[in-house]
Image 1 (tube, helix red, strand yellow):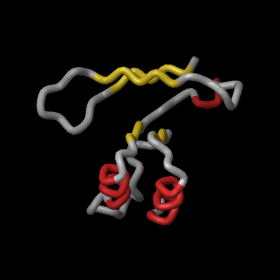
Image 2: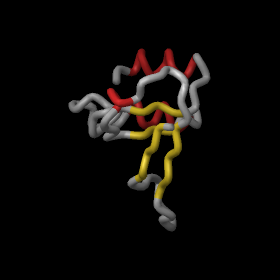
Image 3: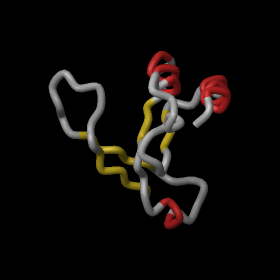
Length: 82
C-alpha cells in the first residue's frame, strides 16, 4: 500500500485495514512506512487474508482471534467473516 493511500484511510478514521498479501508495505520499503503510520494512528493491520471473494455482502462482521503472546507486537490470527 502506498503512503498516500494509508494517509487517506487514516483521514477517514478507519480502525482496521485487511489485505490479502504478506505485507501492507510495498516490497521495496524496508522502513515499513505504512506499518509505522498505521501504528501511530491506532489502525490495526491484518495481513495474508484469503477467501475474500467468498464474502458476498458489503455488510458483515469480522472476528479476528489473535494468539495471546507476551511482549509481542503482532500475532498470527484466525480471521472469520460472518
